Amino acid sequence: MKNLKAFSFFQLYTIVGLVIVLSGCDSFVDVELPSSQLNSSSVFDEKATANAAMTDIYSKLRDTGLLTGNATGMSIALGTYVDELDYYGTSLSDIQHFYNNSVLARNGAVAEWWSSSYNIIYSANTVFEGVSASTKLSQADKDQLMGEALFVRGLVHFHLVNLFGNIPYITTTNYEQNQVAHKLPIAEVYGRIIADLEAAQLLLPADYFGGQRIRPNKLVASALLARVYLYNGNNAEAANEASAVINENGTYSLVTDFDSAF
Image (cartoon, rainbow, N blue to C red; front, side, top):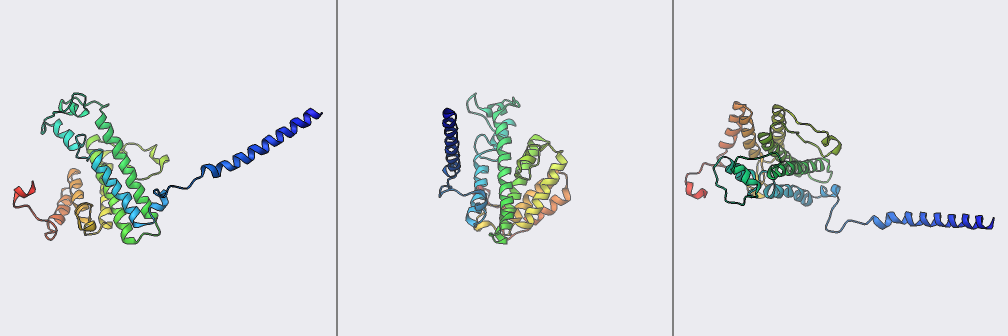
């Protein structure tokens, strides 16, 4: 009987001790973010951090994926593919397969184009959703950043559909929806690209951000929309959008001294 009592008390103390230890685990692992980091909701509380989230997308466009100017980008890879460029790299490079017209489905450059493009699209959706839900940004700042996010989303999908044909069109950060996303017919993809760019036109300002021609404004959206319309066979709409840009003589003009362009 004494042994049973001793065993019962031992069990009781053990259980109490475990409860105390486990209850302290939450506070032990629940640490604050470093001062150099922000949680996702607070990013869109301030103009500077929201703007940084958007410029990070532009850095991804510059450094990785389809539109990078590096050797793995679409311009150089497809330039070698159609013999506009000669290839002088190693035989182990994925770009050599473009030069030799021997691109297979497992080509690493093609896989990178696909994955990095959807990573950028996801980031654009993150900015769009975060900015649209923000209660602290001014309406002008919200419109600009939302317009830029829609522009990027349309731009990347435009290049994807021209390379791969039927593709998923991703418009959310909801992983449950994204994991069951399916490929859409080309015509439907073009319809969604046009809708995104038309919305971007309404949101983007007429002037360039910061006075530098780096980030899109309303006329840049018109220029891309003209190209999308042209590729989709909407010739009249393409002419209208292109004319809107060409007729903006105060901002754009034709080059007369071609040597100055290089």
